[in-house]
Image (tube, rainbow, N blue to C red):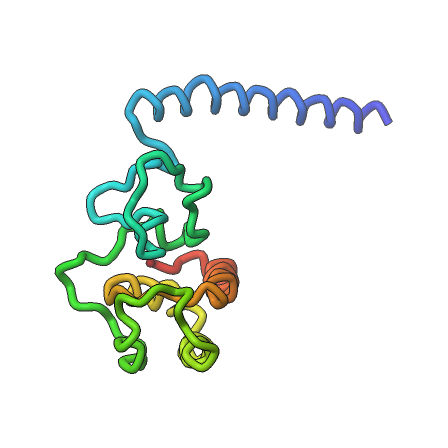
Length: 163
């Protein structure tokens, strides 16, 4: 019993030391450099959270706050350069929806998006979201959570997905 308590105490002490080092060294260093794991301002070539939804970026919104699109796997990675042509995922028929508001889609049009989305390989879902962004096609709001689930599951299955 005493051995277990000693081990538990040792683990707690090591945890406190590691936490203190993280807070007092790494976070302060990152703050001084203006970097961090979740930067509120996207770097050149990156898409902000509001850009994914097709809305202009808002300086007041944090990447995980009110203006959050939920697509952190896409938003916080380098976006495909705007000068490169978009990659098509056998979805050329969706180009007719470019420039439309996501609330304006009919149920038939939403099903057309869903059909394309469900035929994708899970590892292609994030790339498809980028392709829609490049083509200025807004994803229907009803499908946003489904797409996030597919992207999250794909990232969980394969941590080496490059978006």
